[in-house]
Length: 166
Image (cartoon, rainbow, N blue to C red):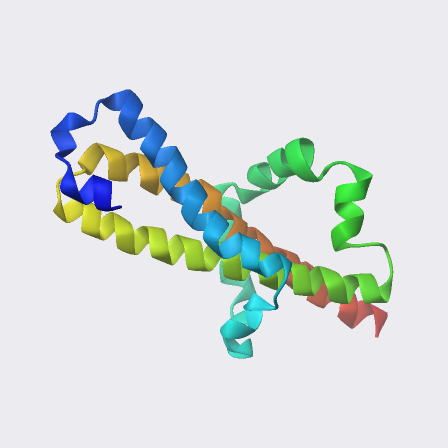
């Protein structure tokens, strides 16, 4: 950030902007993701945040933004293998509890990164990094906003399943 703030936006060509636009969200998201492997970071936000008040609105947003295609992409590229899936859900009731916990952990990490990147983008925007911020925004939407929506969508489905089981 210091390097960006002390440099001139006109010094960045398209390829440099693209590289920074990819690395900046990656690093910031990593800062929030790694602690979640060891700590219950989701508890830093009150439990009210995780209660889904408007599931119909979330479903509409999910469909309008095409998050289902993002989900399919993730299944093919990252989560399609059995070992990866079982970390989150092993098919048992306890597995459902773990899945909810993991979804909250992931959501907290992506939400924190999304907001942080948004704040940093505003600062960089005032410095004239228009092309860079355009790229960062697109990457932030797909890298953090889509996962937030997806985690919330998963919990809607889990809540319905739990109601059927009980």
